[in-house]
Image (cartoon, rainbow, N blue to C red; front, side, top):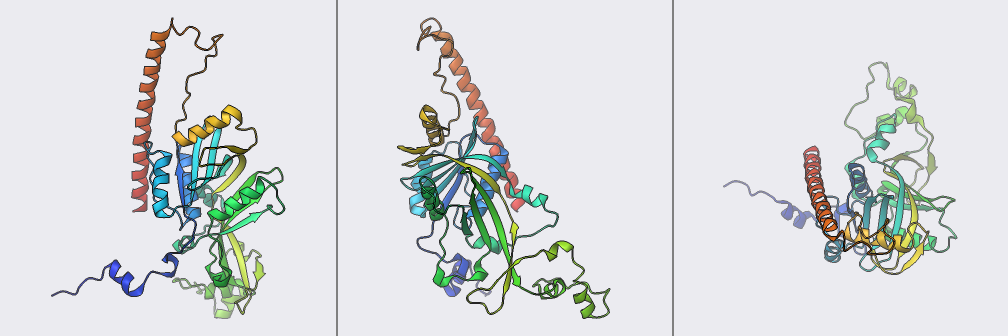
Amino acid sequence: MGRKRRTKAYLRRVHGKPEHQEEKKDVPRSFVIRRGRSGKALHKLVRDYRQVMLPNTAASLRERRSNQLKDFVSVATPLGVTHMMIFSTDRDGSFMRLAKLPSGPTLTFKVNGYTLIDDVRDSRKKRFSFPHSHFMVAPLLVLNGFSGAKFPTDLLQSVLKASFEQIDVRKFSAQSCQRVAMFNRNEDGSLSFRHFSISQQEAGLSRGVRKLLKPTSAVPLMGRSADVADFVNAGGYGSESEGESVTSLTGANQSVAMSVKLVEIGPRMELELVKIEEGLCAGVTIFSTGEPSGNAGKKVADVFATGDFHDDGDGDEDSGEPGEGADQDGEEGGSAEEEAEEVEEAEEEEEDEEEEEEEEEEEEEEE
């Protein structure tokens, strides 16, 4: 009789879960989704922002056009999801909504600009590879420029803090710091978002010594050196970019000084707070910058709730009074509306097919 295969469930019972996979209570979890019509660039931005929120987000969540906002809310409570980030695009630009589940508040940001992870990587002269372990620990949240702020900045600060995992000072370890998510508040009130990776190494070491101590499987090439001292004194034949100055810090639980270096991962976003609603994508507007405001603000709220970004067709620009000429052109108007609906349905079917093809391509790339 062959040896019994040890399944993953058996190994979890015997050895327990790894430290980074242990269930934590009172940890904020999130859904990062897109609503309505969105291009490939915004689809990639949603994917990149899920990388930021790892490991406390649904990285492989798939949205369908038939899904309503209430569908995500209904499954959020059983899964312990506390926040939802909703990305969408209309004729006025791209927007991101940060909502606290299950009853709000909801903050609406206008995305004035963004840069994807791939573009940030291609802009660097030196290639960096970020190990998977970096994304198994929640990032540290840094809020710059929020001190002494009044409403609505104080509410914005509290909502951003609540959406990221808090640091437990008693169990904090500098070695567990792998990433940083930073929101910088500019003078005009807009926000700049950046996402960095943290690399730590012992301070005061030359580049050659660091190469020898680097925990890699590859052995340094020292064929041009008669002795290891020649290799160390020459700096390890590395590139000049490795000699960038870093800030030396000494941790409370460390006996040696450590140098910390930040490498940008991406994405980048330039955000502008335009609206705060009391409820979940609805309710009383407690803050508005005038863009959107009044009926426009209500329309944006309806758009994010329903995912429908088409005109209602209720405006009569050429008529003197509402409803004027309805009796004369009623039949023609009805046929025109039917044709418009057919065109919209055909476009939606084409977009659904494109989304399925994109998802299949992503799965093939992952495999």
